[in-house]
Amino acid sequence: MESIEAVLDLDKMKADIAALEEQAAAPSLWDDPENAQQVTSRLSFLQGHLRKVEELHGRIDDLEVLFELAEAEDDADTRAEAEAELEAVRKAVDELEVRTLLSGEYDSREAMINIRAEAGGVDAADFAEQLMRMYLRWAERKGYPTEVLDTSYAEEAGIKSATFAIKAPYAYGTLSVEQGTHRMVRISPFDNQGRRQTSFAGVEVLPVVEQTDHIEIPENEIRVDVFRSSGPGGQSVNTTDSAVRMTHLPTGIVVSCQNEKSQIQNRAAAMRVLQARLLAHRRAEEQAKMDALKGDGGNSWGNQMRSYVLQPYQMVKDLRTEYEVGNPQSVLDGDIDGFLEAGIRWRKRQEQEEKQNVG
Image (cartoon, rainbow, N blue to C red; front, side, top):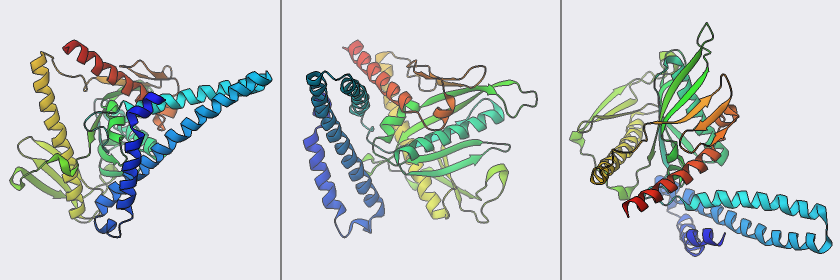
């Protein structure tokens, strides 16, 4: 706990909270709604985090007293209570330690997530929609605001793709270990013969762009197309051309947004997604240069990283960390913290091993 507190730097955290409280109290705060949202979100996160650290510290102090009491009175019930609390505290400290492992350049950012159906036809589209629901439910459990920016519905069921933001500090660092190909094996509800079907969906996690990133996009590098928004099964949900498709001509990156009510709002949202994609593109180019210097063939983010097996047995297993759970439904309902923690620890070990190899 002492090492965690040293890494978190509680004195700096308290100073940051005081500065943000001063900004939040300013009468002009909501003149800039986007900045106000960032200030209040960051303040809420830091206050909650500091409260969690202080409460945990208090529980550890109380635990020492509880064990001393059990020893003094030779009371089996008190000792059992103390041991149960010790286990609970140990788990809470482990969870808090994971936060200290998020030290990457963009880890403290909000997250932009893109999910797309891959091989597997209608089952893949249905699986992609289940993954979207999983992440949105996870955010809901945490009390994190979300914003769905674009949804492209498949004809029969599910989605072809979707883009949404999770607006919480460290959402990117936490969820970036989810990037890659997810695989589901089940009896297809769309197969009349009840055959087992394997389907795939891709998850892309991007850090939300901030003003300090300097992602400037000249107007002559963008082509903007407008079209009518549509709902499931191609049903029109909008009678005006409010949806926006934006193409970045030099890279060929295409993004779209149709979930806002006006073309102006959709254009602004599409620009945010495009900037996040270009930031990721720039980082990938930098990483490729580093890999070339190291003689490394590149990373494996595109590889399969998790299997969701519903038939013939029930299990969700991460193929990198070996972490597994025997209740797929709870995972698909948003209970993914165990996978996130295991993934973050795995990534940290990979980074440390890479540094040792370079050294």
